[in-house]
Structure formats: C-alpha cells, structure tokens
Length: 279
Image (tube, rainbow, N blue to C red):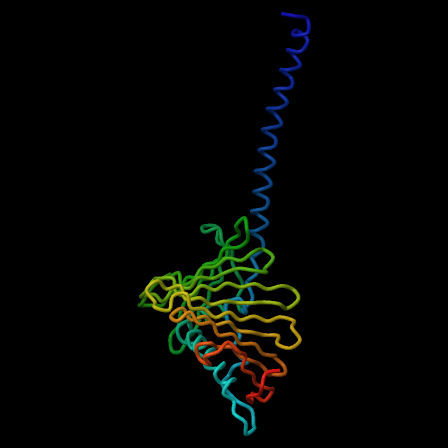
C-alpha cells in the first residue's frame, strides 16, 4: 500500500463515520420537526371556511319589484333563473346547509383517534333533530373536511359532504351527496376569494344519473364600477348559458339569454327593476 493510501485510509474512515452520524442526526431532526408540527396542529383547530364558501348569496334576487308602471320582464327573468337554484339550496340541501351554519356556534375538540378536529352538535331542521360532526384534518396542502350526520332511527354517521381548503383560506371545494337514501355525489361547490373582496362560488350538478349533469350556476362579486356582481347559469340540456350582471347597491342590471330571447344581446333594467334600453 502506498504512503498516500496509508494516510488517506484513516481519514476516509473518519469521514464515513461522520457521514453516518450526520445522516442519523438529520433523520432525528426531521422526525422531531414533523412531530413538533403535528403537535402544533393539535393545539390549534383549523379555521372554518366562511359561510359564503358553502352558501351562495341570492338575497339580491328575491322576486320583488319596485314601484312604477313600467314592465320588469328582464329583471324577473333573471330572478326566475336564480330561483331554480335557490330552491335546490333551501329544499334539497336544507340539512347540509343548516349543519354547516351551526358549526360556527361551537368549538372544536381534537380527536387523537381520527387525528382530526371535531365540531359536534345538534341541529334542528323543520321538526327533525340531527347530530352533526364536522371533522377538520390538516394535510400537506391545507385542510380536509368531512361532515357526518346522524338522524336517530333513520341513519348514522352519513358522510353528507366532504371538502378541502388551502391554509390561506382563499380557495377550496365541497362535494355534497344526494341524500342518505342515494349515496351519490350530487353537487360540487368550488370557491375562491381574496382580501380585496373579489370572490366567486360555483354549484355544479355532478349526479351521474341526472339528465341535468353538468348544469351549473356561478356567482361572483368584483370591483367593477358598473356591475359589481354576476351570475353565469349554464343548462347542459340545451347548452345554453344565461349571463346576469347587476350592481348590488344601485340595483340596475342586465341579462343575456340566447335561448329565451332568441338573440345574443344584453337586455337591461334600471335601479327600479324597470326594463330599459341598454346603453
């Protein structure tokens, strides 16, 4: 063996031992870090997504018209389109909506068995009482959500909807089942929001057995000076897109509906909901 080899051999052995030590130390540090992060998550419940990420605001379209003698056909046609989805929200999704709204009145408790935070409470819909348990679990990309609903004597721990949201609380989605008797995906909700007030929420029919699969309504608000809110309503049965834009304060607006008007023009109403010529 050469003199250089004799010199380098012990150095190589020392280097290899240090490398092995550093590898073990790094593994311990990472494991400790992950454990620490896990403990931090366990100490703080995830923030519930705002109600506006689950319940679409339809308050501007209540079907009423203001005083005056002019016709209100354009505004009322916009109301009719929105009302279809409002019925789905208030009737078909009454229990999911009520169970989500009630969560904001309660505190979450960490459950080590499921590694999730749980909001547990009773909610009354009509004459029926339901036990709701909303689970929130931290994942790498954000938070996973799952709502279990129990109705005594009828069903237990029915996973009525699931969801996901990012840690910043700026985007996410929900998937709602049809009902306990039909455990199929029914409505998918996707939402986005930012700190400037710009936001949107979309309901889409994803029920595979429905002739209206793919039909959706998209509601959004923005900072546009003329029309700061809008609905896009797509009907999959005839591939028709109805577009509605209005100003939430001034109440003037317009609608474009090729199937109804047999044209691609805007049809407008003023602040009293009266029909006017579009400018």
